[in-house]
Image (tube, rainbow, N blue to C red; front, side, top):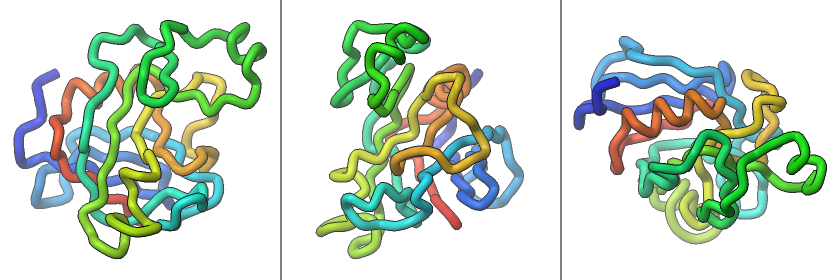
Length: 167
């Protein structure tokens, strides 16, 4: 797939549980994925477990050469590959797999700065186990995707791509 041009933006629609790749202006979707946002709903505050609304950008892309199912903790690949056995060994882990697109808020007082800072809350678009449902809010605040989908998206977008999260 070709790289995104500077006119690309992502729109995460929480009510539809979708992530769309759109041109900078206009609504003609280039790609659309089913995602899973926060089980706690939408919200900006640190510790809320909610998905933050508003305009963000991709601050960092993490995991470029990691294998499918690579397990990340603290934005570092642990060397593990997700499996049912690993899940059984660590039943309480919030699995962050394959790739990470780390978001940073663009709106001071809403999703940037103070107690409502998306980047300091470590809000990502990331892969999740195939056993986790898509199209249903189940995350701890991040935007979860299927592993193959997040790898495709990762290869398509560039740092500083705008990400709009709408209710």
